[in-house]
Length: 494
Ligand SMILES: Cc1cc2nc3c(=O)[nH]c(=O)nc-3n(C[C@H](O)[C@H](O)[C@H](O)COP(=O)(O)OP(=O)(O)OC[C@H]3O[C@@H](n4cnc5c(N)ncnc54)[C@H](O)[C@@H]3O)c2cc1C
Image 1: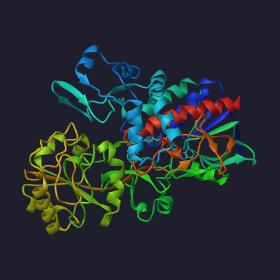
Image 2: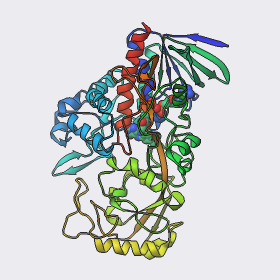
Image 3: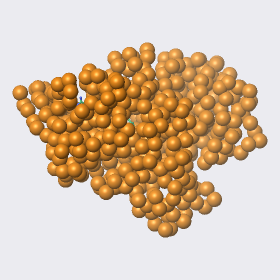
């Protein structure tokens, strides 16, 4: 059997794994990265990510640690803030106060330094003007507390980190699926793997698991998330099948967090089973806040305008999955057409248009047309007329007397032509993970004792997200905990 010897072995090759590998290599130890995918499909969900990144900042000076911003740009922009307090508040609010206080504090407190560290490794960041900004009062206002994205999206990030990994002399093994931990009952000393279909062993003084959740495994989805979840489309990689979680649980690691919860969004109804790197995140449809979400029964089922999409989109995919037939149509009129995000204009899109609602209704495949028309009439009658529509703030333009209410951006659906987009549920990643020691990223066992030689990062860290998630947190969390786990693993290996 093939055998290899390293100081630190990192399982996975997404953002968290690459950060762990780079961080370990900084300490001068010999590092290997094992990637289950081949070179074409490498990079995990990180490669599919849109690339927005949420980190704590309070001033333009903070943002300038991450990207260049000219004086002219600074003067012409309203970047808002995302202070540590604001970032923590949103994590607490969206997780119904369940997020682990220690882990979320580390995520928030380390987020800006980690962005600067990524930059030092060659990652390039740019202002996120395209997706989350608008001109207001002569200034470009960024909303959602997230004015920066990585250049080239998640694929760009993986490319930058890849280049840094090569430069650092880290060895990457593709087509190498870790299948079990080498564990003698006391410490982890490597992994067993299948490399290009053959058995192999990678011995190491420490192992960092960063192999994602179980989102691409329909059996585990049905088992942990519940019946029906096997029917979700997978937004990203097909390789995150829960291997790392299973291997760790097998040797007594402690499961932690929201094992029946996940991040899932509205996604084109006829998108392929797994993500397509050429389309990236563009099967998503995040502008529902400006329209109506209609199910097979012709009814609305969520408050489309509860908050900016950044704070509802990760939860509403699951709401779509619960509807009969697991689909929902997003319906808009021409008043908001210019506000729809770029993903509504891609080539592969399930869309119908009509010049009257009566003509639109029968085109909404699978929908009770009479109920749909009734729903729109009731909605239009309920829209509060004396509040002005303003898409750059939560405008309070709501409905009155209908259930569910629409809390913001409620405008009558009355201006043709009408457009509707068919969506289903696309799962992004699962929330359940492992319990780690907050200061080192070391995995704890079921009795909360550290498992010598075992660390984890990224989607595999449990306890951060419950029920919901603020957009842009996955990549930053992967980088923060990847960097931490890598540094600790290197320390342990010395
Ligand atoms: C469509 C989409 C859009 C997104 N947009 C954003 C965004 O804009 N901003 C943001 O912050 N987050 C976004 N996310 C979420 C973000 O991508 C993830 O949270 C993050 O990338 C997870 O990083 P990770 O390193 O933990 O996992 P991944 O990047 O998924 O990496 C896991 C790695 O493990 C490998 N692997 C799995 N099993 C094994 C095994 N047994 N042996 C070896 N290797 C294995 C996989 O092949 C992969 O390389 C998005 C996700 C998707 C799918």
